[in-house]
Image (tube, rainbow, N blue to C red; front, side, top):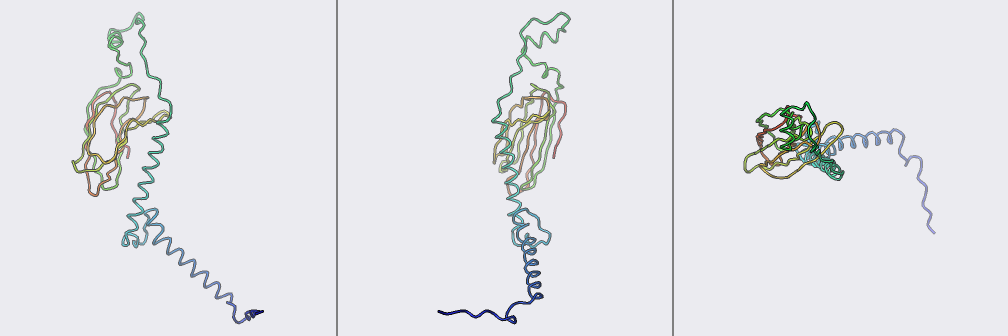
Length: 223
């Protein structure tokens, strides 16, 4: 049977050598974190090496995909919730003292919220760099409607999400991917902000132009 000989004291690394190895290992780990991990995972590139190696672009794509996945998850949760009970106007005879306008509204079946909201028209253009997103919202009352159409260059690839929020409520109306135009009607499910989120998924700058008319009190860019 062969018995290995125990190493002598001179063969073991000294405390100074162990400390030096630990420091070198720590510095190497920090260098890898700053130059490779942060750019490729989080698009954070303090040294510029990640951009030179193409890692920062990889991190930007991962970050964008994570943001869109989170938006899709929230939209799916909102879609799974039971739909709000429609606002059904009473067919009873108007009470004495009601104005002629109120009676006409009831006869035509127009919701009171829609009739009371201001009707206006607006146009807005937003320029998006590759990968950039923007959000535009209309301030609307419950039941109010707004017609819209938006367009980008025919070769553009734009993702969109039509949604609303306000008063602790959220709703997703519609979403699409890789399109250059869209039109329709937004009917507010509740009082709050209702509108669009666009993201440029192409490789060149695009300008999204949106036209809106209907019952809303304000149009504003959120981000």
